[in-house]
Image 1 (cartoon, helix red, strand yellow):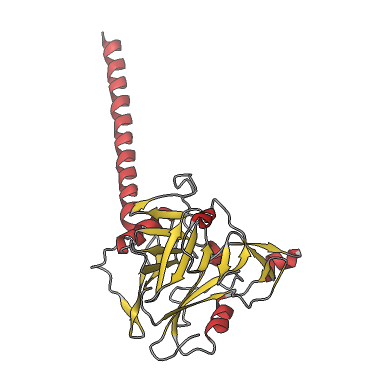
Image 2 (cartoon, rainbow, N blue to C red; image 1 turned 180 degrees about the horizontal axis):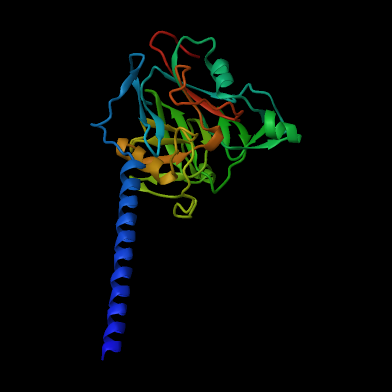
Length: 316
């Protein structure tokens, strides 16, 4: 009887100890999940964001979010009224850019800013866009990136630099009577069914991450790729007349964002649809020639788009 009682007590102690450990683990897990949800996913509503005008320009605003405690995060968001008649869009490359066998000379965002805006008295927002593949010697690929080929469709004013990639998404911009109008296509091959004959810019990126106000992964993988990194993402309002640019830092001073996080941030700010451009080491942004993030990418990219704002200068 005594031996059976001792065994029962030992068994009870084991069960109690195991339950205690399980409770500690569960509590820790819940706490960790809560930290991830509240710290790593900072979403804002329109009313909570303090938008700043870009040099008193009424149709372009921005804000910068920074959290220095662990995990650190920094990103910038720009909101642009595409319908404003004073808005002009320029790109690199353009119809005059020399190219060889489909390859384009890669340049840094600082060089792109100088090429696009050097002779223009205007305020601007400039970002990288289309991903690419490199060509040439090992030195070219590792250091110079002298010859680059767009990975997906890139078409500027009917000048087609590369062919569509069905699995990738695309931004389409056309000019109307009062400014520009934009839309995002989930697959670049959809341009063949598109009836908008006024499209001036067809700019390929990676995947759609937001569609009709809901998270959506056009890759068909349901966001299986969830790593954090530097990101360049673009969102559009439902009417296609308000554009949102999200540029997230992904270096040592910022953990970066996942695709779903980009989508949720843009959704909370008013976007209905959103897509990703080339991220990682290619991700870069300049506002009036200044970098709002901690570091500026020196990587040579194949494609940039600049949104220029000026009330005094007439652009051709």
